[in-house]
Image 1 (cartoon, rainbow, N blue to C red):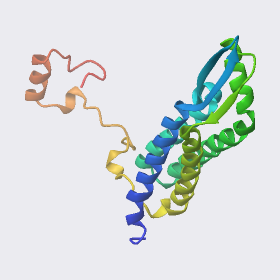
Image 2: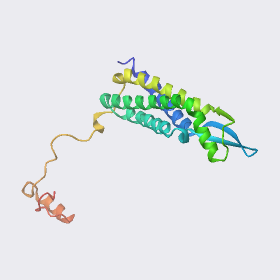
Image 3: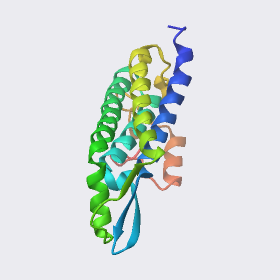
Image 4: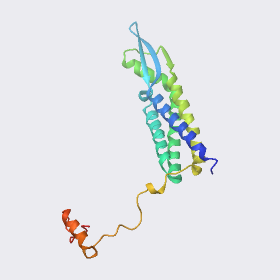
Length: 195
């Protein structure tokens, strides 16, 4: 168990880093397209959030999962890991599925700008980084799932108090000094639940 503790920092850092990279890349320009509109060349840049808004949303879910992984115990941590893994796989699926559909997305955007067809279409490095980041997320989350039981947890002293509620003192249990202090503070020591 002590041997796996050193893996906590590197795996979490790799996970948070790749999750942040995926989220940033999903919001950047994925495609550059150009077309001809009445003799003029029209160019457009299509962001990942425009082409596939689901990719950015799922990338943010995977990033949020790492925040949960940091502050929870094994059972909750594993649930967060599974949710993050599903989100990362979703980003990867969106990137792969959009590959053949990129021409349609570009044609729609160019048509809105007056160009009836796509002349050229190229994918930017942000498109590829989104896919690579999502794949790296999958690897980091699988490693996290396997290693999570040996990772350190927050102490139970940070948990909400459990057990019986605090004992309420009754006026007859108080001495004269406590009664006078209550009156000085503007509280009625004889009222129900006042102390």
